Length: 143
Image (cartoon, rainbow, N blue to C red; front, side, top):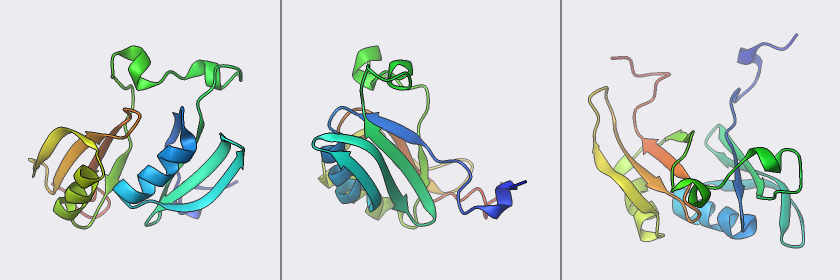
């Protein structure tokens, strides 16, 4: 039996994008992710893995044809709301904020010191997915 502590990341957010190839490039440029794997056939991304430190997000092309794809809606289909949001711990929240903003991220909650510790902000990526970036590390910082 595998235990949660046996892996580097036990929870990996998964996102779908209408233009997944453009999203991959943008996420790397704006947020600092690195491509670990991209499995594509033409413009369709079947599966991609992007890393950030020891964390990861997986993504693929949005579709309504597959059983999985029919379970997921894109933010613009539901009034730019989300039911979940990746949270990424960064060393320097101000520098990350400046990089994301310069790349065109839509800032939802401006950068600020947080009551529970650290500093962070929330933004939307190029297809409207909501993200949180901040310096609070729940593995190290305890209120």
